[in-house]
Image 1 (cartoon, rainbow, N blue to C red):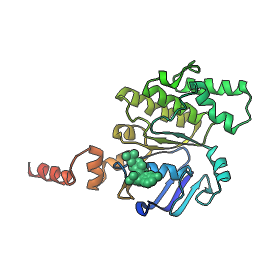
Image 2: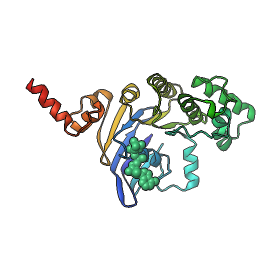
Image 3: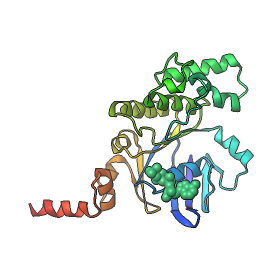
Image 4: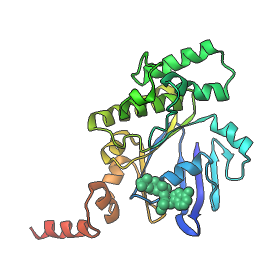
Length: 256
Ligand SMILES: Nc1ncnc2c1ncn2[C@@H]1O[C@H](COP(=O)(O)OP(=O)(O)OP(=O)(O)O)[C@@H](O)[C@H]1O
């Protein structure tokens, strides 16, 4: 459903991604992890065509997008929803108008049909009847849920999530994790989730890809990642602070 083939990216001559190749199957939840600044959000922006790669090719549902025109990209994006890092709701619009936004832009649905879809999507994310509330009245977790309802309003085949649980308490994070999984189940969407929360990654992922130094240094199922022999992966997933900490712990354990 999503394919990156030897994709490289640089900003002002500074390399960020170096020959990334990734194949994400239809209906799969792929989680991308990696240190801050390693290029995770850049991968999402490349996938949705907001950035063009310096080298390499990107396919969305069989269509190559790195050479696509803005018009072609707009058609491809109708099949994609994005949940942004800071929810990115339109503050001057009600919750209902936010969720309806893509439907008004991309479909010819009647106002009645739009209202019905908005109601259904808000119910899916546990915000039944909140159409007339303003974003400023919502908690961070509720905003994320509205953002998800907006992303799935147009019935996309693909949903990209940029740190969907950032800034949320553990219970709300679990709620969002469950919503990502139920969205996949109900709508059969392909999901790409960038997160810093390892517990979320382990809860939701079919596969996890770890980015480090511009490359994918490990990719696999949750149990494969947990068993990775790469010390950088082990250090990252355990949150060990210093480079080399993993090796030190291992040698301490073998000494004791
Ligand atoms: N539009 C841009 N112009 C210049 N540099 C950029 C741009 N977008 C990203 N970068 C740089 O590219 C690198 C990767 O950024 P990116 O946001 O993809 O990282 P990330 O892994 O998502 O980080 P974080 O986990 O902190 O959100 C960073 O060094 C960032 O400063």
